[in-house]
Image 1 (cartoon, helix red, strand yellow):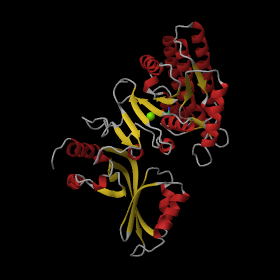
Image 2: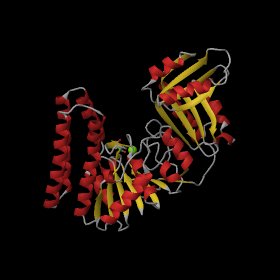
Image 3: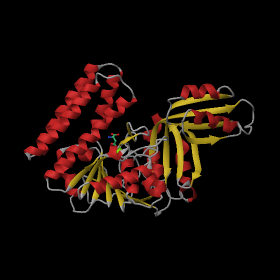
Image 4: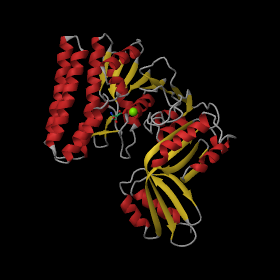
Length: 440
Ligand code: ASP
Ligand code: MG
């Protein structure tokens, strides 16, 4: 069986929903994972923020707008009266619960419940639609099998047991539609896999059912060699290794949730990225195989904080790093880049929630400097650190104000830290010299 995941835009308009139906309608058995329709999760997040700030009327106004758009979509999608009525009832129920939540006290569970409605709506509507169109479909409720453990990692044993059980219990179908993103936590409460988590759902399921392939269908034809939002003339990359894809996803390439390849990498299940709007273009195939040499792609991640920690004593005494790491560990804040010198350590974090407390503790035994608004630019390619063209990078960087550089942490990655104001210009510059063969 294959697992096919479709993102928000793929189910975000009537035209695209029809397109997705055509893509999946080939009589082969498959699991289809859906995101919420585009814009919905953002709207739900805003609704919960208004509830948090006790601004009920603002929350209600967004709920009203959202409900109208769902009414219009369902009206346009269904010609079968009976199916239409059934779907309308479901949509009404969800909006009833959503309205009721504006009277509740805000907490994490309320937030998680509200944001789960997006995927519940999209999967209900989509499965009803393809049933109307004659596809043998069953809805596979994610909350019946998708669960995370105490460490917020997928509970693979539980997932595997339950998804098989549910598929066996359901009437035979060609297409099993399920919700991306949402899951239960260790206490059995509604939770999720973080924003963009539907990709992760797809590979977790792929691993659980030992799928032959996981396909991520989105609105772009695969991983590009640079960020198409900021750079023109980017081109799709046909093949990436799991390592390369993991680095790119982690360091900012928006196309994939950072954890996506983790569940399938060990099992060697290929991940294919495809464009719903152009199903015939090749996309990107991610496998264990290594293709090409040198710098293959560039990605950037914003919202990075750099912290420079200078030893109170002149030399980096042993035990100094341990003390630093223990503090970050205690605040569950992971470190992305790190460079050291004899007297100082510079490192970056992307989650500044506990920054103040961390700095306060560090200052007990060191001098600390913090720089906000930093971006990591990540260059990825098979064995790039050995490649004979990589030295060009250092010439190009002559004119870039680099705050930190990480080279050799892995063979496939070089990371640069720059101020976010210089990000676009740096991406464009790197692109011109590295991919458009302009010499320095
Ligand atoms: N709907 C969720 C989000 O917008 C999950 C996803 O799209 O992957 O983050
Ligand atoms: Mg996404």
